[in-house]
Length: 576
Ligand code: WT7
Image 1 (cartoon, rainbow, N blue to C red):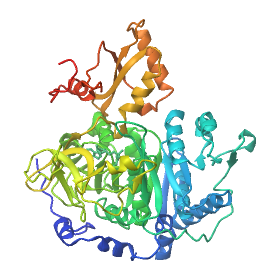
Image 2 (cartoon, rainbow, N blue to C red; image 1 turned 30 degrees about the horizontal axis):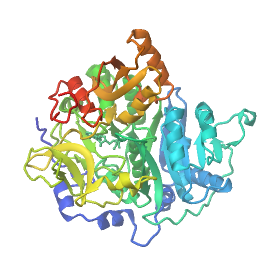
Image 3 (cartoon, rainbow, N blue to C red; image 1 turned 90 degrees about the horizontal axis):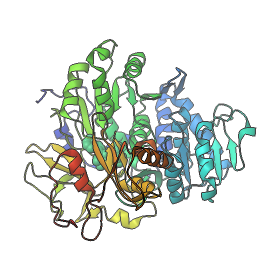
Image 4 (cartoon, rainbow, N blue to C red; image 1 turned 135 degrees about the vertical axis):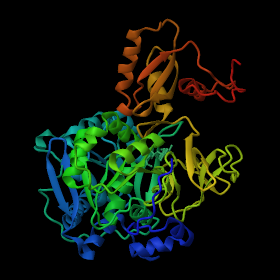
């Protein structure tokens, strides 16, 4: 199905074809008012710069939580609040390039401290608040994090691992009602109680100065810390303007958590660099609550994810139609394949389709996407962002494929402003992402004759559950710690809402027999070690696991079974 949409004259991008044909990054730099050689500090770009444009009194943040508590910040208040964080962190000894993690729910302090860290030149390390101690410790050890910002609700998880983090100097609790509740090495900071800091001279970062460290899961080993730089804002700014179509009168809602890259690149940086009012909701998913928020705040631009859309679909169109959603003007999705059905449903329900966008933690910004006004081909991810050269390359040789419809790996020509500049402590891992002059995404796709990309799947064993990547290695490691488990393999199994969920196959050590009780015991055992996302929904006892002749477990054989797909080349299988 093709929906015939002409390009609205009012969209920021205008004609995609024209933009793409004449684009080079200096266009984006000029739009942002930056020239080569000038310092560029994301914290200042998102706050001080907006106030200098005379927008200090404009609302930057409309915040609400699930209890109905509300807060509002203007850009000037945001500027002063981020200054407070920058000054405070400086006072407690944070120096430029020190890693400071932000480990909290979606409270205003998350967004504000993130920019405060950047203002003083520190490296912000956002962490998802649902992470348990195990997920936290690997990320904090790897990054050698100096200061952790958190809340009373989450501090206990840090306390559990404190002895394993000798270089974590200070834990700052930002909502501590009473300092007697704190332990050694913990301090209280209150944004509201802190003296206003009218002026703070932002650290004069240049475009290559490290800014944000986001951890992402791979197939093997520990999560990898993708390191970004201050110059990324050039691309986040222009893509937020052209893809999300953010403009002066918009109320924008990015539903992603800032523990993940969408929540920072577009839930903080891209939006505020454009001087746009954001609504942020700190609460779980509920179709009803979400529609109420859209109506209440008059949300115009909505950036969400396929899992959320599938949940909305489950609750039906009628529920949507009970609310006044007429403010919605542009809808965009990211994180997982957006199936054609969801695009069509949204068109029928909201009168406009969700526009798919594709990118990764490593790419820092949207790479392939549909543009406002562009013909949406439901099920397609769209076309490369202007200035991005993207192709598919042969799965083995990595030679570009020109034939329409043939599946290959999505490859992007380095470098673009927001690409990661390395994996923290993992240079070999970083170099392994490049070959023959391409950055390899690890995703499979084809390109049709008109240049639209059609996602096929990941080329590795990483599980994408509800838009969150989970490495099989971390799940398998947790399972192997249990006394009864001899071998384990974690794969994605189909799920109506989350696209896939984790399923674990295990073999048992001699002396152990499969039983429901044992399954439950193992589940409870790994629950303590894994974040809820990574938790297997099912554990299946197996007598053997498919392995290569060299003894490597072939997860893709198990995965293919789960999906009812052909198993593919199993010539290296041990027992064939
Ligand atoms: C992986 C990156 C970048 C924002 C959040 C995820 C998958 C992302 C799409 C899409 C199909 C998608 C890919 C990618 N992915 N967007 N539109 N269609 N798959 O960042 O956690 O680094 O995950 O998510 O597999 O490699 P991330």
